[in-house]
Image (cartoon, rainbow, N blue to C red; front, side, top):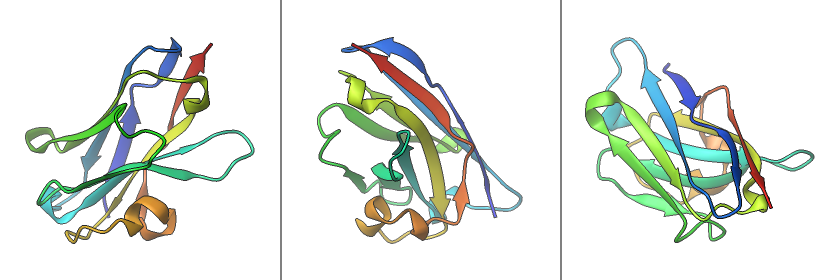
Length: 130
């Protein structure tokens, strides 16, 4: 099992940008074997998929609400996945979580099924004011 450390949240005004980081660690794990996802959960709402990436081949999936504004990227040397968030809107306000699953097969199901992931980070709060 791997451990995930999410960071980079904060408060910004609408139209601003933030970059979230998800550092993955663990004994004897191979980063290339994993799919990493970013999810968010606003108060009183379900946890929704934002973006995910298959590390081995770089396949990415995005929720329609963030396409063109958010970019998921990978730094293999640091075992870290980033979520660059631009043109932020008040409706992007949520706690953002990263998650990992040992599976190198790309699938959009990882974007829509949080239950597919077995390892989760602690969450980082993003607040966007109007």
